[in-house]
Image (cartoon, rainbow, N blue to C red; front, side, top):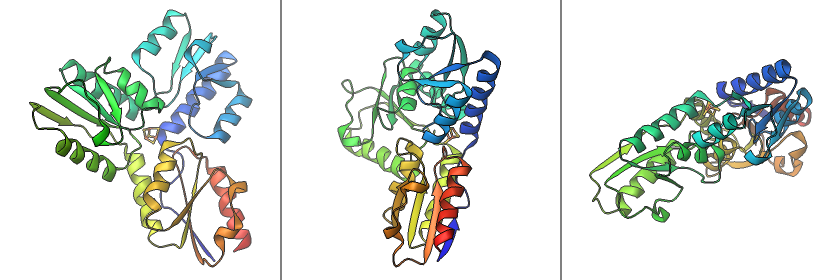
Length: 280
Ligand code: F3S
């Protein structure tokens, strides 16, 4: 049995940066409360707890005095509320997400209605919409897009971890389902390069193997997207960690591929690869 790893996988610079901000903060202040998980990976969250970084699900539950914004970012209202309550705020928003937030703000200020192609329940999407100050909506399906009347100017952004193909399909869908009565349509590319690199490497591997394992947490958007785009090409399974491998999947396969989301630590990937090598 041959085991191949994707050429690009695992931690991106935004995730590394967020973890460093939390570790430094915990050391300097003796403890940090992060609003939501710092990154969507259970192992990382558990390791940060050992260092004194505790994830708090809701804004009202923060007690301070030192609080942190995760790599997914938040809306300006949330930042303001943290400062109003006198908290010291550490900001680990990924710079790529920050760029999408600023694009959202600029579009709204210029009179555009903002549409974010993404999961409306994901913290990044909620944060980016917050920067449009009530003048935006998230959608994954152009046909279900609900707009306030028919805006004259429409600006479209993308959740940073979506796939370019799906984004293009969405934009085409918006253009074909909405009557072309708006004066201006502006489409911004806010997909991050780390996402594209990981998706390209995963697809390249998916074409060469008989079974693909995607290592990462099921609440990680970029990990789930790797599964979504590779599944049509090859039998693909999402595994949180080594104990998630079902050995029956391997029956009859001689070429296995391993890839991982941008929030999956190297040690978790290595454990999975070692396990596969031990039975190869
Ligand atoms: Fe940032 Fe892209 Fe990673 S948005 S957190 S660099 S996947």
